Amino acid sequence: MTYQLALFGDPVKHSLSPQIHQGFAQQFGFDIDYQLIQVSAAELRSRINDFFNSGGHGANITIPHKQAALAVTDQLTERAQQAAVVNTLFIKDGQLWGDNTDGAGLVNDFKQKQIQTHNQRILILGAGGAVKGILPALLATKPEHIRIYNRTIEKARQLAARSGNCDVLIKDDTTHAFDVLINGTSLGHHGQSPPLHPEWIKPHTIVYDLSYGEAAQPFLKKAMQLGVTKTFAGLGMLHHQAALAFERWFNRVPKITLPNNN
Ligand code: ATR
Image (cartoon, rainbow, N blue to C red):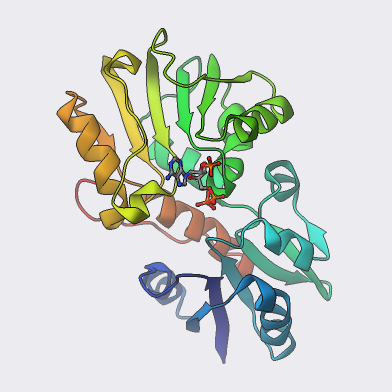
């Protein structure tokens, strides 16, 4: 039997998810067909319902539908409820469940890379769906604090208000330095980087971009120009969130092999 899987988003054509899941499936001898489905917000619900009604086994959701997908589900896992964004769909007892594996995926990648967050000072740039997805899992690692910096400060305020131990960094506040800096804006997809002030950086600061490939480069390059030596794109997070989604669909834990330097 061939298991039907899919990614719903816009754009989806550059996604690495099909290869990653094929690699996982091969580890267990499963036959999968992982389709990339580009879909508008207006069609999201009907396309997801059609997919599962015609035998779909599991799905991922990506930009820009991770928040909208909440409304399509019948049930949410605890971590999807906490994050209020969904990146994984699965069927259980005839109901459509939404899960969020992004946050745990990031934390697992941090563990593998030995990036400490416990008792550390973290700055997150951005306050959109990607940041919402990772915030509860990061807070659960008990950082000293998390500050959120966003162009639209009200969105940063709303996110911080929902989450303990979290506050907002006001525009151009350069009085704080951080141990870990995370770019969660979508600017890299347009070849741009959010602001990165030298005052935020110490010699040991680690800089991580939730994007991967070209989209991660503007921010990571800027960090390197400022002397940061430990920079990472989100390829590891992508693999780890995929592994957790695969586990939901197949009850198997796949091994992750990352390319060199990731
Ligand atoms: P995603 O699902 O990728 O997180 P999103 O929810 O649209 O997408 O969030 C995009 C993030 O990138 C937001 O933090 C957004 O800032 P605003 O909340 O002010 O919109 C940020 N972003 C996008 N374009 C930006 C720009 N030109 N300058 C600064 N921040 C930008």
